Amino acid sequence: MPTADAVITIETFRPDHAEAWRSLNEDWLRAAGYVLEAKDELVLGDPQGAILNKGGHIFIAERDGRPVGCCSVMAMDDGGFEVGKMGVIEEARGLSLGWLLLEACEAAARAAGAPRLYLETSRTQTHAIALYRRFGFTDLPPRPSPYARADVWMEKRF
Image 1 (tube, one colour):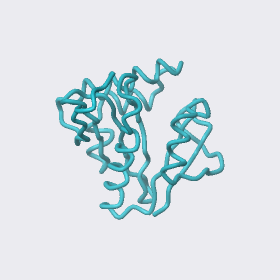
Image 2 (image 1 turned 90 degrees about the horizontal axis):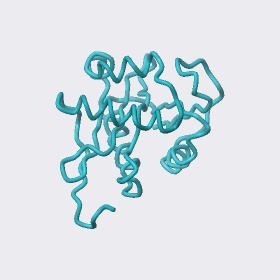
Image 3 (image 1 turned 135 degrees about the vertical axis):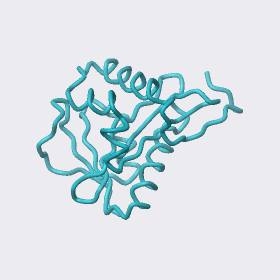
């Protein structure tokens, strides 16, 4: 159980975060019953090349210096940013880390002049979808996706 005096920070990705980035995401994907798909393998195996070198950002939530959550935004062809790979370990849930990670993603997108945040998820991710809606995301019609599990599409326009 987290203590009231725990120090929570949202850090920009550093090379020493690579192992945590991969494990945090593999853990939530597997816990949800998903298989790692080709795009998962790409962004988890090469965050520098697949996200950062293409104008994206990765944020790591730390509690007392230990990675406990993560999220990324990936630059899109239309100038927007796609939110991806948000996960928080079970023991750190309830600390508003999802909200804090989304705030970091939105700040990065706005700083880049993006018109929107976009995301794809699964209807089974009910807690995440509720968070996205509270954060101002609205539903979009279905569209093609590299993820077999994606059946919910959302955006937040600025």
